[in-house]
Length: 145
Image (tube, rainbow, N blue to C red; front, side, top):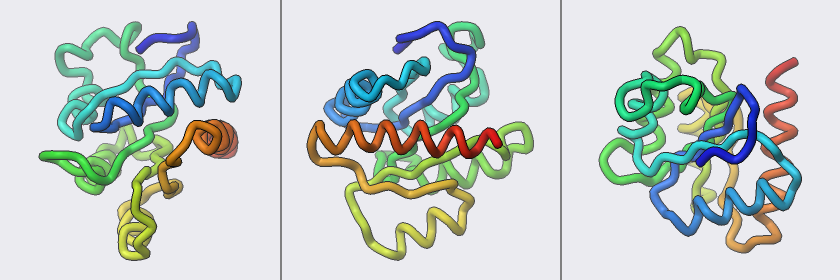
């Protein structure tokens, strides 16, 4: 979902369309002007990051500066995608933030063990989603330094 003319993009990987819309609107309301690309499965995320069809055009589908990765997805879950990302030398520095509805300590520990940069519990309402968007922008700014 192109929204701006920036080279870097953020990519939510989320299987719930309502959550994707909430995150996209929150980014917009929070004044985050990065290009946003959304995919709905772990396999789509891997295909996107590899530049496989239909994501082969890097002008239209640039490599992201930040990946928001939902833990719970059908097929390849967020932990599996994160582990795959960390095995790719060209993506090793990619900022990955795990998103979940759960705050189970084992999920948090697993995310950090696999190399997540941050772990956030998904907001349940629009107001908190705006705070999430601002927090992610701060995380991304810190990762660049």
